[in-house]
Structures are given as structure tokens and as C-alpha cells.
Length: 371
Ligand code: GLY
Image (cartoon, rainbow, N blue to C red; front, side):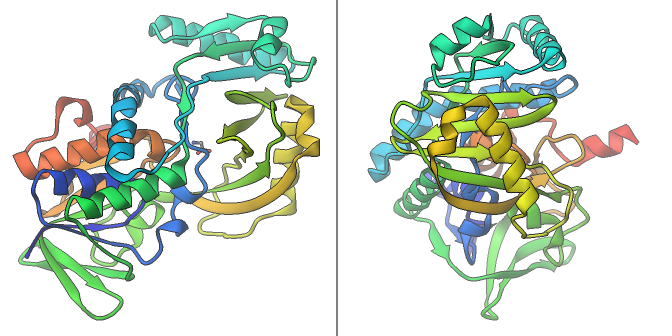
């Protein structure tokens, strides 16, 4: 019998599987098609500071703990698999267009300073020195040198290779239901009619986590994101640019030598898979206002995926209400960033019986505490 079966072979599921297998646990991961997950769309931003929001300080702590792990995580992955995951360390620039955008940047920067986060206010001229392809119409900027990016698809692929190498079995079959017996989770029923039994079931199905039959009620919902990939002209951006364009948020993330990702819509539309004219138009319109050179770039891909949202935007980590079922889901906007800390923490919980300090406080009980 398996020690662990993981439902979901995206970045989170594979990170958990890799770390569990490295601890000597017998692991099987099941996912019919991991490219359907949010990691396929993710721009790969490792941006705890740029994403920091008032009231989400606990999430910020977890995000920073994971960012700290990233260089070693990437080095270990690359060494184990030979896959280059294109970690980009040019930092992030946040820019604003009008007086209201600049006021938001001021507030954000005050929050950064209050928490001692690395961020520096720049004048428009200084911002254009950092990123010469920015429009001259930028009114203000904040530079965050520590917020990086990575090729999310490559990280998922590398994790899959690494998990297999460490001994995990990876099955490309659909997961149909959680199997329970005597009030505990005992395995997964698969689309081919087989059952995988395991001592622990890890739920890492992202936006689909709450819809797997047999899973107790969970506060995870799909948050639709439309995102674009373009061919990037040489010299167009060095690091990530995140902009507020008269109150609308857009980000531009260079990837490898020749790609650019522009994202993303945030829509409460359930599992609506349509790429809309309005979504693509607004992303391109705002991106071109920020970096006019985008006009010349070839549009190569438009896609929709679903972030696993939770009521407080933070993940669900650790034991669930059902014995034997462990949660590794609800990573919302931060799945790529949180993959290292999640993998480590869940493996530690399963192997040693307790979550490490950094990952405590993210159980479902926090929602009960509030009501
Ligand atoms: N992590 C950025 C997004 O979810 O759009």
C-alpha cells in the first residue's frame, strides 16, 4: 500500500510528492492532465512584496518563507533533473499612471516600510532608467528588488521528473472520488475503475478541490484568469513590471529570452472557460499604455485557467476535518511562489506528525474562529 496518494499533479501536488518521496515515503500522484491547472497559465511571479496587502500579513510571512527557499529549491531541482526553470532575478517595478494610482503606490510603499520590506520609491525618470521601454507617462514607481519570476511550466515539469526520480509513481488518470472507510480517507477512486489505497490522501486539486466527491465542504472556489503570451522583442523589459493604469491592474513578465506574459483578469465566473474579446482587449490596451513596444509583439497564446480562491486569499494547509485527508490547496494567486514551502511542510506533517512553524495557522479552523 502507498503511504501517500496525491490528488493533483500541478506544482503543489508534485512539490508535495517530491518531498514525501525524498523522505522515503511510498507516493503515488494522480492527475489526468496537469496542464489544465493554474500553473499552466501562471506568469511565475515570485512576488510576496508586490502582492502584499493590508490584513494579509500571515500570508505574507508564508510567502516570504517560501521565497527564501526558492534559490536552493531551484538549484536542487535543476541539479536533479537538468531542467532549466529560468529563475529571473531582475526584480519588480510597480508603476502608476494618474494621481490616484500614485496615491495607491504611496500607501503600498508606506505598508512596505512599516513591515520593513525591501522596496524603494523611484521618480519616473529613475523608473525609466531601470526599464527604458516604459512609457514617459508613468507618474510614479516603487522598485522591489527581491520579487523575482520563474518559468512556472518548467518548474512543474521539473518537479514531475524529480518526483519520479525520487521514487514516486505518477498516473495520468482522472480522479473520480475520495474513498473513505470508518470515518477516514483511505484512498482515491480513479476514472479507470481502480482504487489507490494510501495511509494519507493529499488534496492538491487546486480550483477543483472542493468538487471532488467525498471531500468534506471546503471554502475553495475557482477565480477565472485570462492571460496572454507574446513573442518579446530583444531588450523589451528586463524584470517584471506591474502597473496601475487609472485604477486597473496589469502585469508584464518577461520569460526566458523571447517571451512576454501579460496578465491577468480576475473574474468570479465559476468554471467559464471562454477567452473573451473584452478580456484580451483590456489586458493589451493597459499593457500597451505601460510599455508601448508591446504593440509590435506577436501574440502567441491566449488562455484561461482557474485560481483556487479562498475567503482570505491564503491557502489551506494541513489536516482536514476528515482523518487521513491532508489539504494542500487554495493557493489562489501564489501557487508558484508557495510550492517550496508547501511541499516541505506537508511532507514534514506526514512523515513527522506536525507542520513546521512557518506553515501553521492555515487550517480550515481559521474560518470557524471568525464566525
Ligand atoms: N499571480 C498573479 C495572478 O494570479 O494573476
